[in-house]
Structure formats: C-alpha cells, structure tokens
Image 1: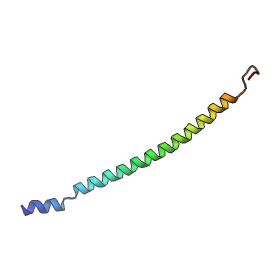
Image 2: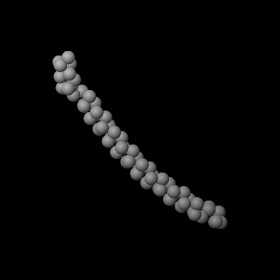
Image 3: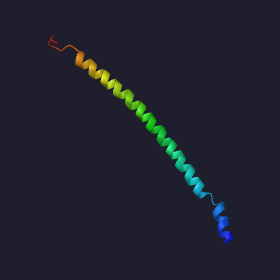
Length: 63
C-alpha cells in the first residue's frame, strides 16, 4: 500500500496537464483580447466609411 501511495506522490503527469491547461487558457485570453481590439478598430473604420458615404454628394449634383 505504501508503494502505491509513494508512486501517487511522485507522479507528476497531472501537474504537467494542469500546466498545459493554464498555458492554453492564457493563450486563449490573449487571442480574445486581441480579436476584440482589432474588431473594435475595424468597426470604427466601417462606421467612418458609412458616414462618408452618407454625407457624400450624389452624382446628379443634388443632395
């Protein structure tokens, strides 16, 4: 029984899996943060384009 307990204490495969899980979670948080920032900038650019199109004079010369 003590041999089983000693092997359980010395087994580090669970710790390695937890470390990989934490690394994956940090990468995911970074990707979500970056995608959100880029999405906000793209949205602002499209809003600027839409405003420019709405305020542009028409081809016939009437507004």
